[in-house]
Image (tube, rainbow, N blue to C red; front, top):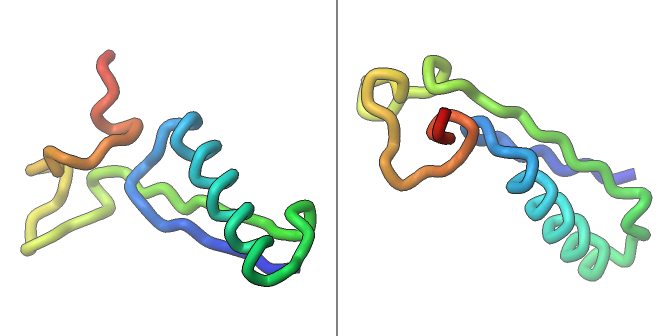
Length: 73
């Protein structure tokens, strides 16, 4: 049983669903493994657990990325 791991900033559930459907579909087509045998895991990182250029994303959130961290409250 193949496993796919997605590591990213925290994603919304609708984003995870779409990514899971597309990744698993493509993997199944290319590998000829049935979709129900392919597992996909999400590792979501909060902004205080990711840095770029030596600065935590919690101090300077990425403007173009979309996910749970920039949903309207």
